[in-house]
Image (cartoon, rainbow, N blue to C red; front, top):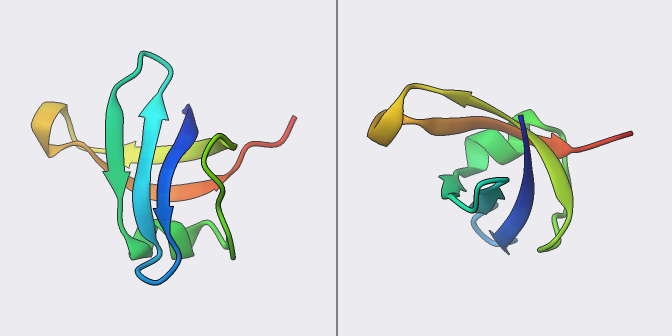
Length: 67
């Protein structure tokens, strides 16, 4: 699934993404680390993997979207 980086805190390695429908979805350090990134800037297109449904939905991987 694709999204756009919305927020990122380099100290906690956590933040949030905006899904293409505008829904914000937070991610934690484990999801950030799983993608192998070192830095993320707001506005970057990312690829995410999500587990769960509705309110239990959570991001388990954040990595850069490559074309």
